[in-house]
Length: 421
Image 1 (cartoon, rainbow, N blue to C red):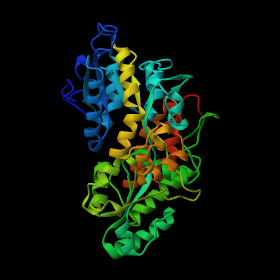
Image 2 (spheres, one colour; image 1 turned 180 degrees about the vertical axis):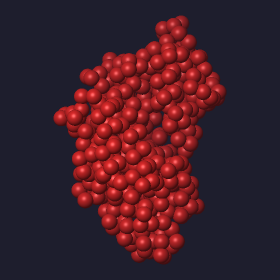
Image 3 (cartoon, rainbow, N blue to C red; image 1 turned 90 degrees about the horizontal axis):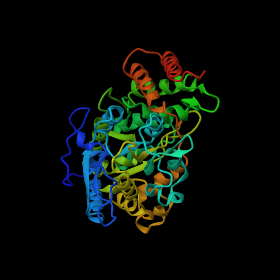
Image 4 (tube, rainbow, N blue to C red; image 1 turned 60 degrees about the vertical axis):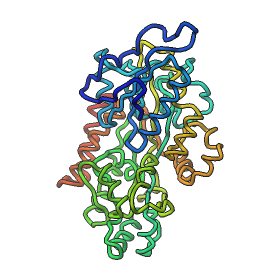
């Protein structure tokens, strides 16, 4: 995001500069009562978003001249472990961090996050949409400020689908048939399937009527049947040639294939809209279409995702940190990131802004987010994805049978969740 705000954005080892811990101490107030001191911010946004967020953080320094925002960009794939290492070792943790929604309960359970109820960070809390607000709470307290919400959709190349004479598929069966026509007419693959990221397993699982867990019943459900059906569906799409996939670098490879016209469709989220529009296929932005993720045997469904802002419990400058979190999730900032990046606001009021109402992509994703399938907000949720990744990889790129792989997911879940059956 930003630098030049009093920081060098180095992301070298696990313990990133001890200066990141707790600002500069004190009560965070200057001689005139205004907030002051240092706020270190770990940002996990992608390359297409960093420039905008950098300028936004600079705006906080203009609003509060006595505050120095130290910006550190942390790669999303490394951020969870780096924060736990820093917070657990009481050295190098940031004052504020951009946290994936599934991390909040985990970090709060470990005691690493400051409760935000009654602080300036939750200013205008009634304005937050219900689903994003739910991801910020754990055991009756609020530990994060909802910043961005999202879900998955089907990005498609209108020109390639038109050349092949196919409609936008509403089911994966339709997609498989459309892919054959697309390849014959255009030489493009029908779909790039993210085979390296377990989050992309969820639309297939939900589409087959399944879920990871039944939290109320404390029951593992990923191996009840739909889990195997979902893996079999994904495997069939790849084996039939309807989709191409990679075991690694799916984010980079998939977006590039779509941008270059090598894949006519990709399941992706609003965070990649700006990146997709940089591709040669979308010099005319009107060529980019977005539709709901195709459905399986039980219908269409996609997971709720997004990002929150959390304050480190060990911060030495809580006053400035609360204000920074408030600012970064304010209606003004959310309207700006919607206009510049087509990211989805978490505040209901922002959707009433003329610039947001006129954003075609936002208007598609907002109804999709309203219907998105919520993940279980428990401390272990993030840990569940590793067994999913391993078994998804074994099915797509190895010889594992879907039923066997789903069973191993379930076994791994029960080891992680001792009180689940």
